[in-house]
Amino acid sequence: MTARKIVLIFAFGLLGIAALRDLGRLGDALPWHRLYDFQDFYCAGEAVDQHADPYRYEPLHRCEHRVNASEAYRLDPKRVVPAPIPPYDLPPFELAARTGFPAARTIDAIAIAVTVVAAIGGLALIGIPLDVAALALVLPAGYLLLDAGQIVPFALVALVFCGVALAQRRDATAGVLAALTMIEPHLGLPVCISVLLLVPRSRLALLVLGVLMGLAGVLIVGPAGAIEYLARVLPAQGAAEAGYPYQYSLTYLLVAAGLPQSAALAAGQVSYAAVIATGIWLGSKLANTLQRRELVGYLPAACAVIGGAYVHMVDLAIAVPATLVLATYSRAASRTIATLALCLLAVPWIDVWITKKLFLSSLFVVAAILFRQGLTPALSIGAFTAIAAAIYCFELWPPAPFSVVTVMASARPGDLAQQAWRAYVLGLRTAPIPWLAIKVPTWAALCGLLVAGFRTLGRPAAKPPK
Image 1: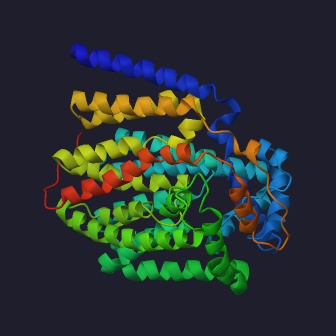
Image 2: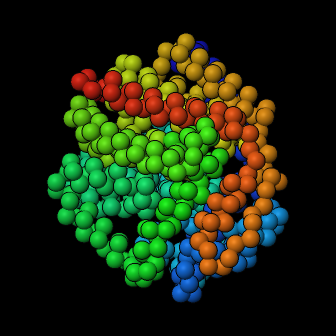
């Protein structure tokens, strides 16, 4: 072993120990103690169990205040957070409501952790080095999605194994898994369209499961509830979060720039259609160029979080599989661009900005990815230094907690929960420039993913590193 390797191992060891020490100091803020969105889904499931509307202010408001004792709920007695999940997602949360909140939350935390580990293992099945896959997902999926108690990890693992099935030419299985990505409809829709168009032997399985999921949703909430979800809840959720600081969408950017919300939403919807069409075309071309069929699903999924009318912070991990494939199998400059994009996506920028104890963990992840990908020392040092400096500068001026800024206005029990949430978002008084600046690294990563994809067209695949 050379002296250089010994020094690197020692440096990584020290950085890793320091990062774990900082994480341990989070205490009650550790992700498995929070799951801050879980109560929204749990209460929607309880509403269904009680034959009530899961999308209305009541009974969501009453349930959320009963099960959530966080500062935000203590300071704001009118607070409610919508649960805009499709009706076919509700049965597990209905069962959770019958289990009781503490036990259900523990089960959900375990399920999310297992799902993220499974996604990492699935990526290894298509030749992504296991440690690189783990490094890329540990913070944006393992930490952030567990902290949020979100349903996105279940869509992510369905996407990953859809790609595995495509790579192994098990097309009917790929169709089933593509349908399951519709757990998060705005993320799964591009995957389903791409697989339907490009993988003929998947169509029957995909369509049958899709129809069954739709029928299950109708049975759960009734025809009126299903129509309400499509016609009212989805548009209301998009409008409510158009200016929400945790959004990464084109609509959010245009609203922040002063464009009227209706025009910004329309532009976001047009861009969503245009970008996923581009992603489907590019995914099919790259699948042929690199002989990586998984990109038929992965690339359109990544394009679901580029532009658009609704791209939440918790959605961004869905772009990691496509980035990993390009960082592993493309060549030369394309591989370098994809690797740099992967480093930026591996950092949950808003969480790191707010929670300073994630600083060293982020640096460890970035350094390890750069080392494993074998970029030149000068480029690796430059990229690491730039990312470290950016995180440090942001952490010098973290945002004020929203619970200190504003509280919700009164809402009628029969209102959609999104109406109260929209009034809350409009009442937030946040400095727009920092909230735009913190998104720039992720936007750069998503643009870099597309650049790497287009540069790869017509170039042969590289052998994956061992």
